[in-house]
Image 1: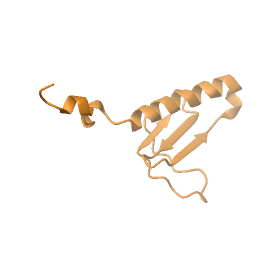
Image 2: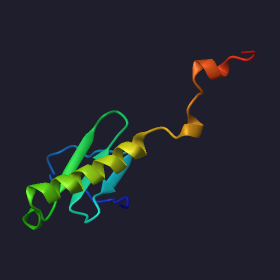
Image 3: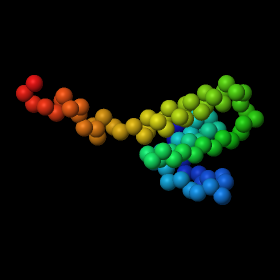
Image 4: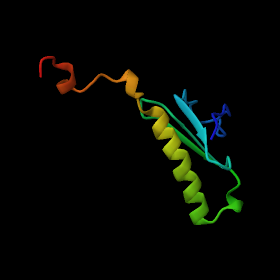
Length: 87
């Protein structure tokens, strides 16, 4: 999955300033999301999919989007028990 920069398909929808913008492996599903909780999902080429294959594409894109929004381990503060010294 690779980041994309497509514009929203619906001109009446306020543009989303995504923190993550990913596609499914076959690029039929695009998910753009922000850390604030905004999300946009676009689906192309529905005629190519069965319910199961479309669900797989959505799950794949969602996994990448969620992983991309998670803070990196090195950016996170250590748990409280690791911050104490002398124990």
